[in-house]
Length: 131
Image 1 (cartoon, rainbow, N blue to C red):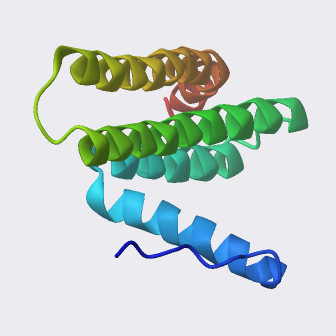
Image 2 (cartoon, rainbow, N blue to C red):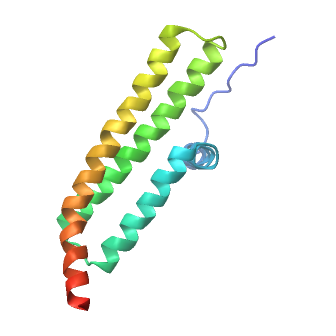
């Protein structure tokens, strides 16, 4: 007999946030790439404070970090769903997983280069000030 999902209409709103944080925590704990993205996010936050980036630079950095981590969460959801629905290897399942991973790669590469544009001049100026 299949379990039925209980209705969540009457559940408190905070429970939705709890479930979302559970998903994020699970992804950070089990997905190597998500851990890498999370560490990069922490590094961006540190560097943002250290180099005193502008408000617009903060907005760009936070949007990019959020986009990369969201893409990784979606990628994990896609891969998990495919594994559940298609436990055997199938070329279309592989294509779906590879495409989802490719989407993460595209936004991560864009974020990396935009991060270089924002932080590299600040790093160079800092190094020059030390010399």
